[in-house]
Length: 138
Length: 138
Length: 138
Image (tube, rainbow over all chains, first blue to last red; front, side):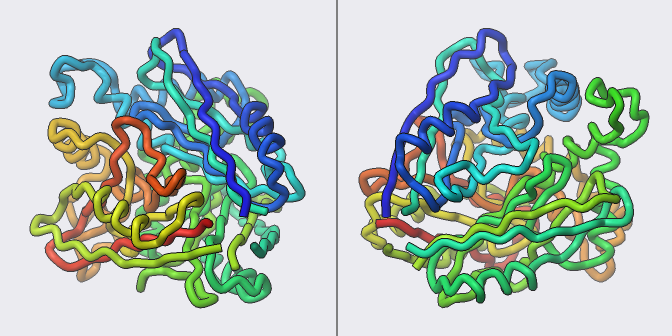
C-alpha cells in the first residue's frame, strides 16, 4: 500500500471566503503515484471546512448569506466561547459545511462527478491556515 | 490491495426524495470480494446527498419539513445562484445532509449499527443522477 | 494491508452531551500497529455523532444552544417520527454534526491539527451506545 501526505497552506485576507483547491489536490495525487485508492482532504483548523460543491460565484454568495443566517457572527457576545475570541460562529459554520471530503481515486485521477469541485471554506481568516491531503492506495 | 468501483443510477420522480440504497451497496461489496476495508459512497451531483440514518417514513417526512425550514426552495429569486436555475436551495440542503458516507467493511460485510441504513437524498430530482461506490481493502 | 476494529461504548447520563474520545482512538491506533493509513470513527447509532472540533466548554455550551435552535426537542409532537418516541430532534442534530470522522494516520500517530479533538456527540442518551473505530493501512 502506498501512502502520501502533504499540507496545503492558505491565507484568506477576509474573515470568510471559499477557495477552489481541486488543482492542488490533483497535483498531490500525481505526486503520489497512486492509481486506485482514497484521498482524504481535511481542514486542520476547527474554524474552516473542506467541502465539495459547485464553483459558481452566485452560489458562494448564497452560502455566505445562508451560513450567516444559521450561525450569525454578531452579536459576538451571544456565544460563551467568545472570551478573548470572536470566532464561535466559525465553529458552527464549519459543522454545517463539514471538516473533510473523502474522494475516490480511479485510474490515477480524482473520481469526481461533472460539477464536483473541492473547496477550502474559511470562516475565521486573515491568517495562514492548513489543509491536510492524505492519500492511500495502490 | 483490492479496489472496486461502481456507479449507481437513480431517478427520483419528484424534486425531493430519499431512497434506501443499502442493498445496492451490499451487492457492490459482494462483487468486490473485499473482506476488510472501507467503502466510500458519495453523491456525484452537488444537489444530492448520501447519508446514514433510519429507514422510517415519519422521520423522512420530518427531514423534508426541517430542510425546507433551514433552506427554503421559495422564493427562488432569493438566491443569486438561481439565474436560469431554481436549485440553489438543493445545494444548501445537501450540505446539511452531507455528500458522502464512509463505512467500515468487516468480515466481508458492511459494519453498520443496528438501525444504520444508507440513503440517497435527492433535492433536485426528475432526472437521472449517480452515486459512486468505491471500495478498497483486502 | 492491516486492518483493526474496535467498538467503544459510552453512556451519557443526560439526554445530550459531548465526550472527548481522542485518547481512546489513540489507544486503538497503538493496538493496531498501523503506521500509515486512515482511521474511520463513526457513531453506530443514528441519534449520535462523531465530529472533530475544539475541547472548550464554552463552545460545547454554544453548540448545545445552537443545535436546540436549529432542531428543537420541543414540542415533541411537532415531529411525525415521534410516535412512541421523543428523539426525532436527535436525528436532525446528528445530521448537522455529522456521523463520522476520517482521520489520517502518519508515522503511527493521528495526524490532527493543533486544536483538533475527536468527540462523541450524544443527542439521545441515558443508555449505552457505541462508536466504531476501523483502521486500515500498512
